Figure 1 (cartoon, rainbow, N blue to C red):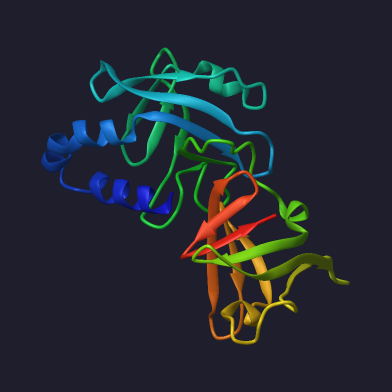
Figure 2: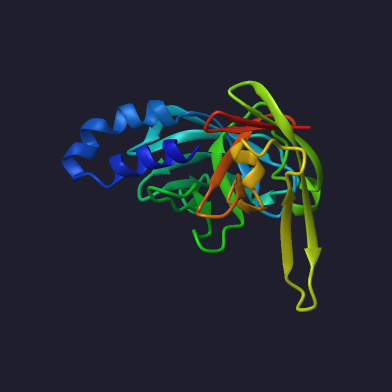
Length: 218
């Protein structure tokens, strides 16, 4: 997902002439079903961004009925310009998703996103929140079972959450044995340990997250 956003951002910041030459290619690559992902864990909504041009630099969009995001019902078209803009029948902006080379397209901004816009992921229904990650998870490396880790969250006296990771069942020879904590970063699950050790995992299928040769599953 981040690679897609990065590549698109590089093309969009190119010179106007280059953008004009590449715009058809970008539109074709971007077109397809997308999901609006609420950052608060509510159900995702789907919108189809088509390559059918209905005005200069404007293309038809077809949202699926979604009570969770009423504004989506007004969307009839979309445009790529400094991000992805969803427009109503009069050409007014309904939602504008800001993006850069390292972040997912976000609305209303990158610092405090309420929604992400990503290509549709089969089986993905919502962004799991912290309490949904609690419990035991199976960890594999290159498809081979490694061990079971346990994710937990505790609240200290100041009201801040501490997210801990127990890797007691992992062999001392495994990098997983040095993992100590976890956090959510956008739509990624980050497992971390000392000396900047990190494993970044992204949604692959229901109950399964992958990244860098690692797989986490229930």
